[in-house]
Image (cartoon, rainbow over all chains, first blue to last red; front, side, top):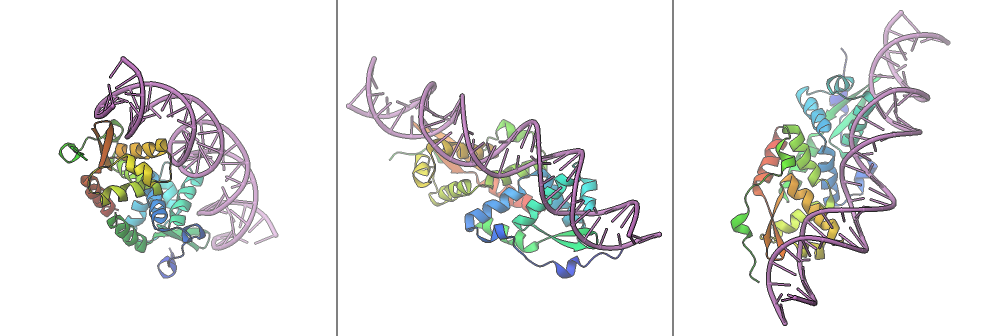
Length: 109
Length: 109
DNA sequence: CTGATCCATCGCAATTTAACGATAATAACA
DNA sequence: TGTTATTATCGTTAAATTGCGATGGATCAG
């Protein structure tokens, strides 16, 4: 198993949507992305298996592949996770900075 | 200004919806309630003015009264805030336990 | 090159959310 | 009592979300 270059390449790359948000909107975006059980399950999974995964997520969750892909997209656009292409598959991993940011935003409440 | 008995009466009273949620669903509910800029603004306002408010929120936010009331309902059902009737008005205040809970849930991620 | 695999995206249906005005309910006040 | 003020709720509309199957584009194995 030759995966993966994810550890090397995972670097913050905020999506265009994310870039233009002011503080509270950014906070809301992060919270909303967290606001679905499936997406929380995905984050937990990525936390457990420290390295990146993808198709495995589909196997674990009771959801169709397209649905999981959609949730991954939401998480990625919000900045919770990052995806890196690794041959035919895509390898996801958490963005620890986002956790820090979210926690500090929570403290400003 | 004789308000208010809010400090006396503010005690946790989870709504029926909240009671039957497992861990991740509860987490998701809390996050989702946070997932709107107007609701974050409401929480900030309630944090600033330590005591409860209500109609003032309507004055501050650029939203109709019914819309604000709806957001307050979401926050209340999720457990972020509590409302107490004070004469003809309703006085809202934060639930600090929910903040603690949310933070610890965030740490389980 | 061909076929298989992996994944994102499209299109669709059903549900939920957000916002508003209008209405009702309740409590204070004249 | 009747009036005013405050807030929740109803009904509606528009938009976003959720979920799925189907399609299509890459990439790798043979």
